[in-house]
Length: 307
Image 1 (cartoon, rainbow, N blue to C red):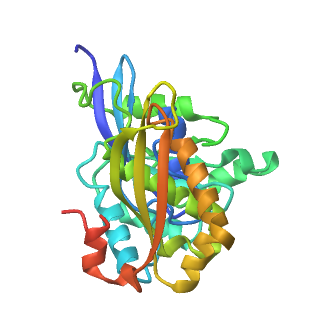
Image 2: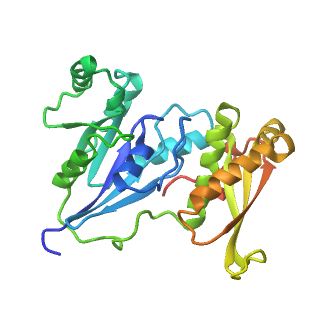
């Protein structure tokens, strides 16, 4: 295709700067889970935006933070590796805060990397109008390279997102379409479903559970829907939620199963965007003490280091 552009673009930043929400906004569909909890993203995920002129493969990464267990170390190492071998890097900051040591640390990561990058100041809608010039200059001061591009955006309202896409397109190399034009993500179907369940755990349990939970999809199958007069099949999904402590299991299940019911109902609503027809979702909770510190369990749950 003449004059067509394509390329891989990594989003990198501290936890909770809004990388996943921004990717969803840029793609125009929900392909990455989001929550107010830091370190929501655990796996590198590709979100694919295809237009008549280009195909941008955005790579969402875990937030870079100081890890406290093997899972955290693996996530940070994988996030750092995602800046290698791509065409462009979007360095995402939470512009509602002035730059801190964590931001400067991530900036320094790029000092020895030859890949071009754009500074994206997310959550720009939260910055007071009379502070915007000051905040922009505060971020510009930590970068000495005058050729770096800055773009302010809001991943909630969409402000600046079209401009960001145009800026990314300007820096992409010429190349063919790399994925079919209706592809939105490269995630396996079972991983997407598991993440939708984990998202609801994060949103509904907040500080009591989040970092110690994993979700495994045990089975997906089409079965006869005995309640349907049209004899339409339903998709039956069996999933296990992994936690580390007995108290966490109790919180997740809730009184007479109330919390597990809330999580299942909310997850099923989002699953309907991926699955045609009725869905039967059955959730179980299993305790595996200290699974985040065990290499074998990380590999079993899909959290091994990228090769």
